[in-house]
Structure formats: C-alpha cells, structure tokens
Length: 58
Image (cartoon, rainbow, N blue to C red; front, side):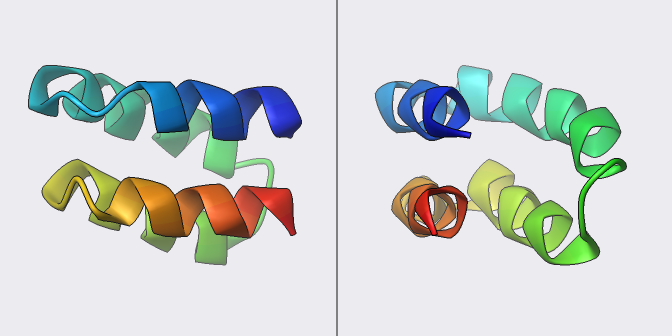
C-alpha cells in the first residue's frame, strides 16, 4: 500500500488523475468501497490526493 500512496502523491496533474480513477475502479474492487469513494474524489479534486494518501497510509 505504501507504493500506491507514493504514486498518487507524486501524480497531481488532471490528466493523470483521470487515469488513476480508471485504474482504481478495478483495484478498489478487491478492497472496500470506502477506498473507491475516496479515489473517485481524487479524480474530481486534486486536493483529494492528500486525503487518499492518508487513507492508504492508515
């Protein structure tokens, strides 16, 4: 999970956020819906990246 948090943190461009959203859909499928919702917010707001990072770190 540490690798994922770092990847999202380093990516802050809108174009990349869209890619994260598509990739997260399949990845979150194996985890809980809470993470999926958080990642959805990331695609909408760049600030959401920091929030998602905290979720992964926990």
